[in-house]
Image (cartoon, rainbow, N blue to C red):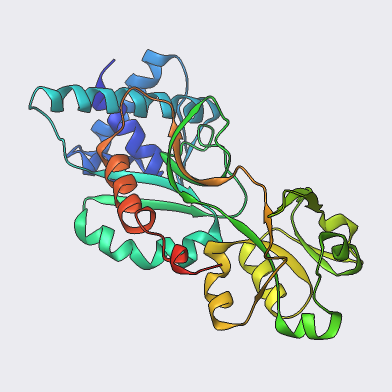
Amino acid sequence: MDTDSLRLFVLAAEKLNISAAGRSLGLAPAVASARLAKLEIEVGADLLHRSTRKVSLSLQGAEFLPFAREILQQSDAGLAALGQGKSNATGTLRFTAPSTFAQLHIAPILPDFQSEHPDVTLDLRLSDVQFDLIEGSFDLALRNSSLDDSNLKGRKLANDRRILCASPAYLRDHGTPQMPDDLARHYLIAFRDQKARPLIGRDGQTSEFDPRKGLGRIILDDGLSQKIVTCAGAGISSNSIWSVYQEIKDGRLIQILPDYEIADKTALWLVYPKTNVLSPKVRVFMDFLLKRIGKSPIWDNLAI
């Protein structure tokens, strides 16, 4: 299979513009269209839908795209091993991450990455909704969960310790829980379909934090909104330290039940589809995040 045609298809799928994809490779629009048509005949499927107004990826094209990227990555890596081709980081990197973490810790350092790797275009999808990497054709994702998908590989970025906290105003009006059982008499804030999580005391006693058992609850699907609502005095919520460390430091939030630890196997992982080849653009972005964030997370400097 012609790798030049595959590269053209990948670019066209990313840009949704055949002419622009062709220009990136030094091809006239008519030549680019002819090459894509030939590739579609070869694979036996319409990869792109074309009209006079726009280009879109077909269902077959969406299914074929990750395999095309894999073939190109292996080809580039093989040529690089022989001292040929491009070994530097180039192209578009599709990356997804939870919006709250990205706003706090990734967005502020992106200009530095741009300066170091000007030939890499970052296509970011920042949302607390978890996208499927393979179906979404993502190169890399940040996940704050356990890594249990056999189709993915990953590197740990940092721990994701979580604590219970509330605002001083809420505690003044409703009192401070002294034991886990006291939580049932408080307003609890839940993140989406949050389930009960074990609470383990320093003496080994086990209880749980279950936002469904409070006096009432607010359910949210956005981490930043959850923090804002908690700071406003709506109730008690479970938050990652990386999200609330500044509010804890400034006294806008106070940790609840500090003698109890939320037993959770989650961590911050940089994950990517299983592949024999890690492309230069993915490798350099992972290394950048590990160096700038994972080496010594700023929230680890807060003694809690």
